Picture 1 (tube, rainbow, N blue to C red):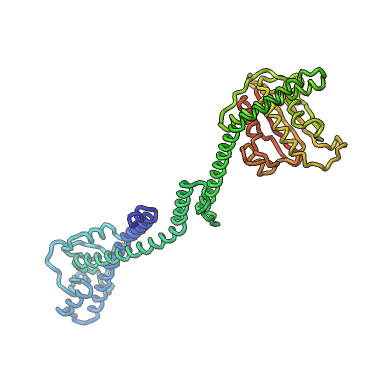
Picture 2: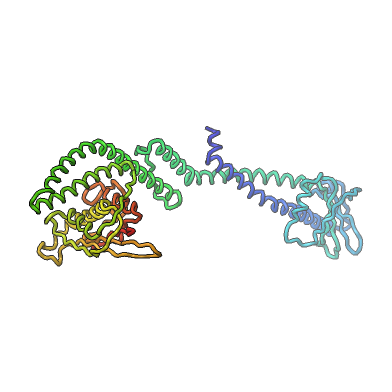
Length: 472
């Protein structure tokens, strides 16, 4: 468990926080050590100046061994010399006979401490003396010289640095823990919960237990939680759709054989009706033959859809207005619809397409439009002007040698809701009438198989417009 902690995000966060705080302390430590050295030297000069003032105030002042020892113990100063009227006078102590002496002129004003001299003092061996030169505070004084062992400065500097380093380490650890606890509560724990929830979801995507509880956070973590919950919902919906597709394929495969036999019997009867001597019965028989043929083809096409097989159109020249009229007539029934049908497609417009595919595309669109207008009972049936209307229009567009036909299906229904628009071309997402939602999906695939497309152009309370774009 300990190894996992240090390898995890929590351990890395704690270590990095301590390291960064220590780096900041080190950057602050260097100038603070230089300031300490500067203050330490100034304090020695100040002590020497006070002693010089005291000695000048006592007539025939002479230093004693006891005074020298006490002064050196308190200030670490070896000797103090005062120069006035061109004469150098020894105030206290005795200058040592050494060759290694570093002169420091305290009369020079420095804006910044001497970092280089501080580093040399810290890492030096401590041998030799420092000779400090300063302006005296006595009347008529010309120069004040102070001798200090370098070892005294080194020892005090080392003590100060050790104390600062220890304090910085405590500050770094304490600050690191506080930052770690804060970031752990705000970031690490939510991320760990998301990781655990993602692992559970990966193991069993359809299991709803253990769902993450979204917080009201407005930051990136809150956004991540919301996106994760949305992703799970989308994936579960997709899995449910795939399960329904698999179930549909199995069901269609089982009934396909028996349904073909039933339709074959119906086809034999319709063939006899189509050969009847009475013209009206013969026309109805021919229409029934076409309907049965389309039923057989639709059964096979539904099986192909459940297997995700693309339908290859069998193209031939066809009269568009006639085919659209037939699809609208089958969708509206015989005298059962109060919707006014308007066919504004040019009667001489021909296209190169699969007639069965084009029939299915527009039959689905017409049925959806009629279903949307069924609930509109506000207008009396005998008022044609206010009756609901289903209209189709088409025009040819040529661009850079390519010729397309744009076919628009317009209705005066109540329009599509926002939820319906979001799942418009998704299979098995339901429909306004409780259907499977396959009609528009199949129609779009058939249009794209022809090299065209089907899309929603507009929808509002005034009606809905679907557009089919097909190459001629």
